[in-house]
Structure formats: structure tokens, C-alpha cells
Image (cartoon, rainbow, N blue to C red; front, side, top):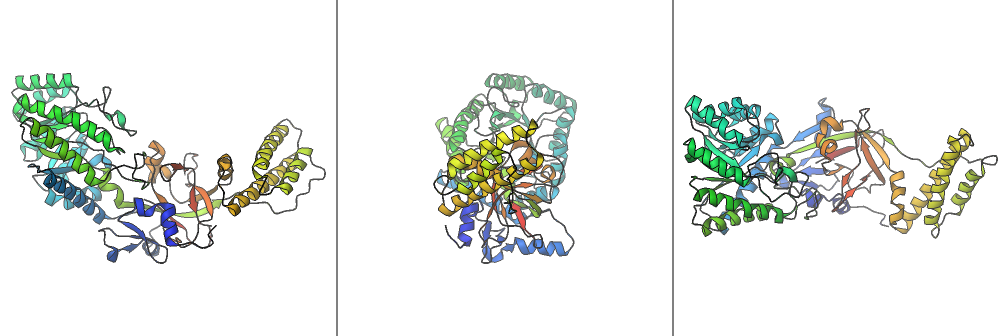
Length: 534
């Protein structure tokens, strides 16, 4: 085993160069630095930032935001579509919108509106409250305001009036009944807004949000319903206001093939709508543009096997091909990329306040008058070596179970059980040391590492600070923000300070897998130890 440790070792261990590129790096003293505009000359030292904030009586946990990263992400997204349109000689344009549901915090929405102004970057809403937020924030009258979600009369009325006031609003019909609702509001107010239709595609996503598409999807119109909607729009003399086709196959799409399948189907629906008389202008490809959380660049759920440029190329190419083949004018391409734009811009930083560690008992084990099973564990402990450690581990596990059973039936004293447990942990530590010495990984001994995991208690609440982690098992890159020139010597899980047993983090990003532990440094109560959730 290597006795020294380098910054490159830490980068490899935590995958920083893969998932953190280009915003996060490690400096020469082992601290995480942030380059919000992809400029290392203007990098910010996270460790020093936290210490300075603490001196100002700002206590941890801290959620640190970097608005400049939002600007960079918006620029990247627009540049990728611009390059794709040049490559495929696409005569249309691109306009992105940010789904407010992704992050409703005011400073996030304001940053997106401000930085996206020159790109006519708009907002997507899914309810009347979100619509009111968008109306208050949007500054560019050319920016799109996409109205999705379930709609009641007040929601539709608000959107119709906003359209009359000059907002570039599109009301997207997601259920057939909404056609009749919109028609009633139009009749009442005498204002015909621009409309869109969400198609319920047969192509489904590959993420936990796969049910956003398919026959039983919550929102969207089937092909049969789309035909009915067109008929009703003709009867209501509103077909001329149908401008947009929208689909959504879920968030965090890992495989580009899934996106291609959806584009192929949706582009055919688009050209058919044009051929049936709808004056279509916009093609909204929804969300799904993923984040490579583990840096593997694969179709693993915490990754994606495509780049942002690949995504833009495939979107533009599919729509261009379908339109050219049918002599249809190409539309303005719209995407609802929320995660891809906003996820990099914030870091949760917590401090470790304590640790629960299975220590090796060093006191003298006196077992002369103890049960024979206790004496057997001692004999196994003495005999453990590099040739028999695997067999020894299975033997002590069985003895531990037998001892616990005997204690439950009253055949063992508390003293004897305590001595047996102490010996058991001594055996585990001895086997662990042998594995480290010979630098060997044995699949059958994975449970040993689990048994010896330390619990690091951090000053935060999983429920408040990481709701996506406990509610939908979302994985985030987690690592220390300093001491990265030191070898981490502990394997641990994280626990918050709440009294709820679910207040823990025990699933961590590995390379194309999920790890049950995180590599951590030894803890000293007299020194701060900061962890970052990226």
C-alpha cells in the first residue's frame, strides 16, 4: 500500500475531476476551490470562505450559492444549441425556459432571468402561484412563459390576462378537459391566448421519472386525444392559436438513445400537426438533460452517457430531418432544462461534531470462568493470520449469534456477553488490519467493512437540507473540502442531529455504483472538519 497521499489521489478517490469539472478543483494545500466562471485565476477557497463566514457569526450548516455558475450554464446551453444549428444548417432558433419547480428560491429565479435576458431565456410554471412569481420576475417581453401543470379556471384566467398585457405566454393543454376550460375563459374575456399541446409519447424515459411518459402518464394527450383537441379548437375558432408541441419523458435521462427515441416520435407528431392546419412555431422538448453526478459518463442512473453538445446536436438533427422530409418550416426549439442549469450553483457545507466508532477493546480479557463459547472466540482471535482470516471471520460470526441467543434465554450473564462482544470486535479489527496489510479485497468480507463503519455526526438536518436524498434517494457528490493532501483512514456514514432514524446518509456515489460508505479522515474534536454536499 502507498504510504503517502497526493492531491491527485483525492481527485481520483472522490471523482472530482469527473463530476466537478470545470467548476471545482483542489489547490496546492488540499482545499476545494470554486471557479464560478471556469476561471481558476478567480477561484474561491471554500475552506477559507467558511472560516471567514464563521468569524462573522454565520454558523454552519451553510448553503453557499454561486450565481456566476448559473450564468456559465446558461451560456453553455445556448452556445451548444447555436453550434448545433450551424452544424445542421438549422434556420430556426433556440429559446430555453427554466422550470420554477426545480428551485423556487428568489435569488435563483432572479439570477436566471437576469443572466438569461440576452438569450430571451424564459420560465416554465406548473401552477398559479408559480405563474405569479414568473410574471413578477420576467423582464424581457420576448422571453417565453410556458404554463404547464393542472389548470383550474383561475390559473387559466390569470394566464389569459397576462397574455393580453403583453407577456409571451403559451398555455399548454395537458388534459383534454382543459381545451373546454380555455374555450370558456376565452368566450368570457374575449381574449384568445397562444396555446400548446403536450403529447403523451409511447417512448418512456429510463430514470425514476420514467412514468412522465407512456400510456399511463399523469399528463399529456394521447394521439386520439390530440385529434379530438384539434377538432374542438376548430369548432371554437382557436386552431390558429395553437403554436407549440411539448413532451416530457422525465428528469435526469441517463441514455441518449432514450432521448432520440422520444424525439423521433414527437417530431412526427409535430409535422402532422402542421399538416392538419395548426400554425406551429415552437417545439418544446421538455426536460431530461442530465447531470453526470458520478463522472462515469455512462447510462448509470447517477450519470449520463452524453454531453450537453451531444444533446443539442441530437435535438436539432431530429427536428430538422422531420421538417425537411415534410417541407415544414423548422420551429423555435424550446427546452426546459432545470437540473442542468441550477444544480452546480449551490454547495451545502456542514461541520462534523462527533463520531461513533467501533473501537478495538484493549483491556485485558479475563475469561477463565466464562462460557466455553466465549473461550472459543478468544482462541480464534489468537489464531487469526493471513491464511485463515476468512474462515475465522465466518466462525466468529456464528459464535456471536449463538452467544446472543444463549443470553436471550438466560444461559449467559451480561458480563459474559460483554466479554464476548469485546473479543468479537477485536477479531474484526485484526482481520481488517490483515486485509489492509495485504491490500486485498474479498467480496465475502464486505459485511465486515459495514460492521466497522464509523458514524460521523454532522450539524444539519437531512430533512431540511437534503430533502431529495431521503425522499427520492437522490445521490449527490459528497467529500471533505479540506485535508485533501492526507489519506482518509476511515470508512463512515453520515448522521444528522435530529432524533429521527431516517436522518442519515448511507448511500454514496461511486464509479458506476452506489457505495455504502464514504472515505473520511480521522476526527479531532479540537479541529474543524468540513464536508461539502455538491
